[in-house]
Length: 614
Image (tube, rainbow, N blue to C red):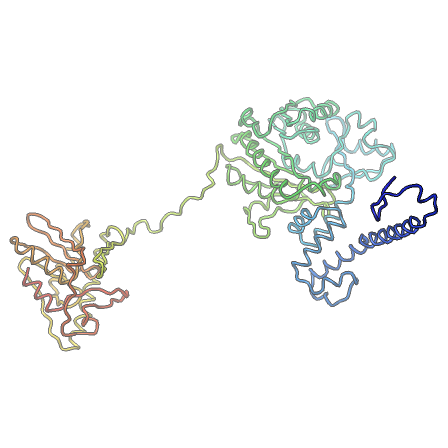
């Protein structure tokens, strides 16, 4: 007994023996449905050629919108009425499907490159890179090695920007199994990985650290440039990887290297300031070596890139702390990755420039494009133009990044920006201005202690305002009287006429008087008069009352003691009575200054009353 696919009912063998035709008809129907499903599924899978046409037409539309009405493939007509954002979204889906990337990584690369360059990069990443070998000058020369390989049927040519690199165009024998290889005459090494060691440029007799050494290609190149002198510490986190390092160093005849396995983030605690030069070929996302590892297309996400970038920052901090800034010939740190992302390259270097006392120097490399100093909304240090980038679609080598740093001093740099110094240190804060709130009777003080210079400049301004006031009064036909007292001087902004001698005397006293903090008595005119009356009843008062143009404050100094009167409560505030108007502003007991501030002024009658009470 089994179950029918259509009815899900049990079917017995007796039904077929009795010649039941229902099952035969059902079988035919199901076969036809399967064929239709298969044909529809084939139609659902886009043709790679069709996808490529859509990609090319989308690139044309993005480069020039004039091509929207230029026809093109029928499958690409859907792009003609779309916005740029929609076209980019469809382009990301198409290149993901065509090149085999996850869509998140496709969108990441489209943000890094212009659309056309992004497609070129993906095309180049699907093609294998040329085979390159490095001649080991500890045992042979590049010329001799090229002659030996040519005799074995290999077609080789020298790489022009390197003294030891050889490109293998064609070979009839496995290039990694020749007698020359086993004898240590050369090392299989990608062209891009030669650049970090060339930038490091180690000298004979120096102390060098290779923080991520396995499998030993760069370490053996460093020993080759140092002519087996000095010493090299070849470190790698995983001991099992160091087995290949040891084997290669023995085969190539390297004798000045110590192999160890430490966590690179903590190596500065073991070798603090012990090296002249440090090479950090940091672990990375591998976006530059997709041609050798196609799994990157479907495994790497933006979150992975951010996580790796954090590790790279920790390793670079340790590398800088391990180098000796006082080294006469060194103090150099070279940072490199086999990735093309900003997060793993420019952002890491920009971070370390703010955290350590280092600066970027010229790498000395003849090839490569300058690093980014700005990208989209990101801005980096201008010196990042000294770094070098390598692309598979531009240089026909693995994607790589190389930066060369020189350590200037030990310690950590404070990342916080210093507060800007205040301009004009010689100019002190503005003088205290007391502003009365007539309704609440509160005192609001602004500014700080007045400087001597400010006080000296305030007297001419008072004289100027008095002169202007006199002109207004003359026009209105009003006489002005000077208020004089035996032991009192009344200095008013408006409503007072001063003799030239008095003005000169005030100016002289103001210039000779040292700046001194005074307590301001702020009140309305009526309140001041009542307070002065109260003080007068207590005894003889010989005060100097000064009505300032800025604050209308009254200062009282007793010969024996200093009494301070401050009016704060609303109950004691009495509005001054209007008098015969000299001008429209005086009519309400107020006037508007040139600065736009409304100030209380004393009229002639009020000054007389005030003088009589004093």
